Image (cartoon, rainbow, N blue to C red; front, side, top):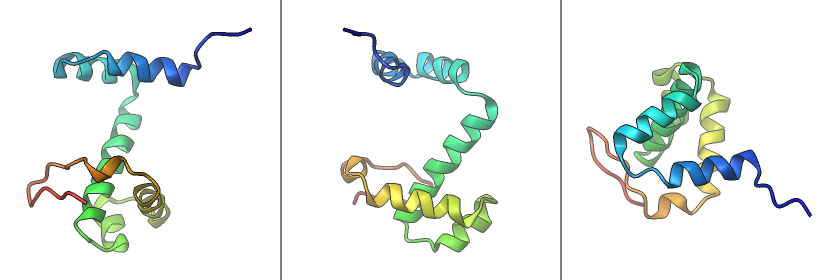
Length: 97
């Protein structure tokens, strides 16, 4: 019987053990390429802007991403309960669903 965790589960376990923000930053810098980090930042900005009811086409234009990228973000936002209790920090306002 194979009891080895998948790399994805190992990553989750690793990140869950980090409580210090500087350690988390160092871990993410080690794990992600600069491009991957940019994509992750865009994804979070998409969620934040969608929660502020900014139209998808406007989000795509502001972030210089394709409309399909924003649509995938909208679908992810609709299909998860994670954001029910998560509050994004924004310069405009924090939004709780």
